Length: 120
Image: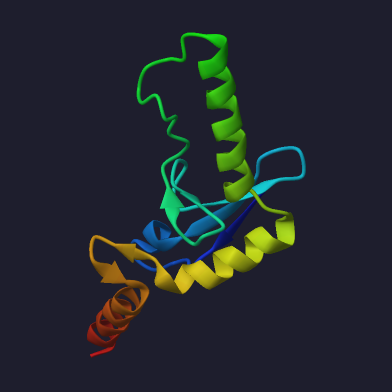
């Protein structure tokens, strides 16, 4: 299941770039995403996913695997929410989305200017 949250009109040019999604991730947990890989944390920061302290290499022994799994579970706990919390966070974050330096307000103003030119 997935919900879309966006401050721009659905039929607006490039409005999809500003959308957030609230997506079910199993075990009664939901995530808030800017795209399939960028996920909102409880601290309001966006993350590209869990980064193990060992860097890009794979854990090599039991202690490292334990560290990896504990870290990943902590990351998931900070980036997964109940459904209502996820929806609320998405609604709070939607007006703050910026794409290539353009804010939601910039995009809305651009859409209004384009509409005014068409009417003129």
